[in-house]
Amino acid sequence: MHTTSDKKLIEVCYTPGQYPLYEGKFDLVVVIDVLRATSAITTALHYGVEKIIPVGTVEEARAFKAKGYITAAERDGQVVEGFDFGNSPYAFMDEKMKGKTVVLTTTNGTRAIQLAASKCTVVMGCLNNLDFLCQWLIERHENTLVLASGWKDKVNLEDTICGGAIANTLLETRRFRSNEDSTVAAKFIYRSAREHLLSFLRASSHRRRLIQLNIQQDVKYCLTLNTVPCIPVLKDGVLVRLDYHPVNTEYAIKTPFSSHSN
Ligand code: 3SL
Image (cartoon, rainbow, N blue to C red):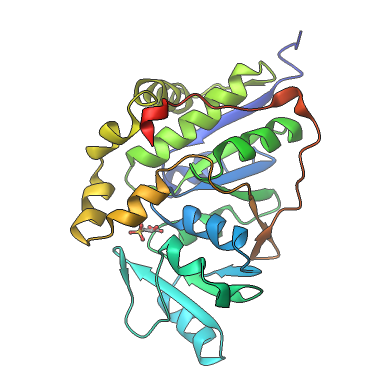
């Protein structure tokens, strides 16, 4: 039995613009950008990219490129002219990327990562690492904020569902609590969506945006659950793979989603 005072906070912040309302009150921030930044970063580190340097602007990325770094830049879903590639998870699955350092800037995701970069622990979440991440978050048992990247400071559905899934899973352990209606709403949106994730997300604005760019393969990949047991963590401004090998099977996490979701 856990008393309220033992319980740690889990809250969901919908956009980087709202982050100042939560800043400084949490030990750990999980940045989410399901389509596609945190899915791409998690995939990259899982497939062997050694480090990712997230930068906020295309100009910063250009400065790294001039110094010889491999650089990836995405704006409005497209690869920015002059860069090696953009934000597709598939770009990072290449054998040639193993052991490499990549500099990355994206429309919303890298901005959220930079905002969160502070004294607290910052990790990346997505649907691809959902259960592995939840297991680690439960073991860590710290005051946790999910920071959704949204789209240009507007709420988006896919990050809200992923944030709601994390909150729901942590709250069900009864070792976490939440105070905010944003968390309650994200949890209920996830519960309404989990039986038919793809049809629910068919309505999402960003999915429609990406489909117009003809990158359905990326969208399908990013909406697939539990494909990469990897948690990217920010260390001195650089994203690396967290050294986590679960030993505690007490919380063998299985976040409920219908098998038809995939
Ligand atoms: O906004 C971002 O950070 C991107 O992930 C957007 S996109 O999926 O590349 O369009």
